[in-house]
Amino acid sequence: MTQNHLESGVSLVEMFQYFQRLYGDRNHRGLPKLLHRVAFMDIGVNDLEEALRKKDGSEENFRHLEVAMARVVSRVFCVADFLQQDFVTPMARKYPMKECAYCHRNPCRCQERRNSANMIPEAHPLQLEWSLGIWCGHSDVLYGERNRQKGVDHCLGRLYHEVAELMGPALELELYEVELIPEDVIHEMLFEIADVLMWTAAVANLEGVELENVVIRRYGLGCWNCHQLPCVCPDQFNTRPVHWSSVQRKHPDHLK
Image (cartoon, rainbow, N blue to C red; front, top):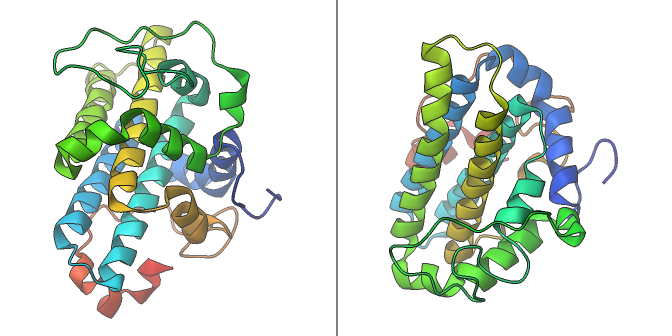
């Protein structure tokens, strides 16, 4: 990865750092609160659901789905950037190389009712170098069989659930006007961010979307809209749901 380009195979840590350079300042100005960012991510997941619902097997609609997937990843990074802490290490602790953290099998053989995750105390150093593409492959090895049995609607529901897990503390912090987020809350939220990204990977795997590639294609040369790095778009964020059937006709730049 160069200073101004995102390339295939970079670690997830480096990809996150790239997005911090790309959108960090704009997010700070336009989405100054944690609740804003989690809500923005939730809108992105809703847009992904709409893209899945509109899917008809056409190349155009598959491109819509790819864009929707890339947008969710960008918004995961947006939330993580607010906390200003490493989420990849918690991700490696909860999704270790060798086995499922819940049932301790590979592939996962968890039952419907399962115990809490037994996370390893330290992340494996190799996992901290994994790219998003490798993480997607890891997700498929561990959970792909179960996810294919349950279907994409189940995975999407789990994705919504994990976003809700982030929405709860974000809303509580806003309601009680908490200025400094407690360390234990940050700790839990980092694991929830990891869950959101892994369930996004699960949906991508089921739909045949190469998640790392679509993220790089959309954001690898800078902002998809202003084509600059860092982004120089206005601070106002469009929070209206995407109507994918009209994107190509009315907003062709949306697919860049």
